Image (cartoon, rainbow, N blue to C red):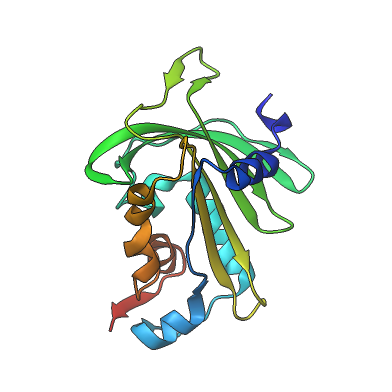
Length: 207
């Protein structure tokens, strides 16, 4: 059963393993970035609850919220199970390769949303048997990876946090370098811009 998977433990074990390739992006101080690099109409500042709402929506519909990565129309979300503070489901989508953005691969992710602590875990898998009997297989063009997205910081100045670990046999510096553009981007990550425009009705102008 997917809901019996300890997503956090799987992620942390991979993160700590000596051979994997781990990347932690700088915390995004969302309201500071909005104030310094955007004109927002009408004016707006995120709360932690609103930023978590974005994470929940993004987890369920990655092709909408991450259109620069996920091929439009490729995402499937399989039925979720809610137990206590957790919500578990599996999603499958075609995503750009981290180090080769011109090509896509099928990505299988077992997702856990920890609504109390505002952590979202995405545990990559090589294979998934869908409820309708289809057996789905992940692409072999890059290592399987796990992701943690979370909301940190105070409620009125939330942080967007992002860690990823790729299941390599030894740390791959060239693969880690694929995330440099994300780390150095002065603007908000695309999924936050989508949430602001689509769900919160804000007009954004980059400065």
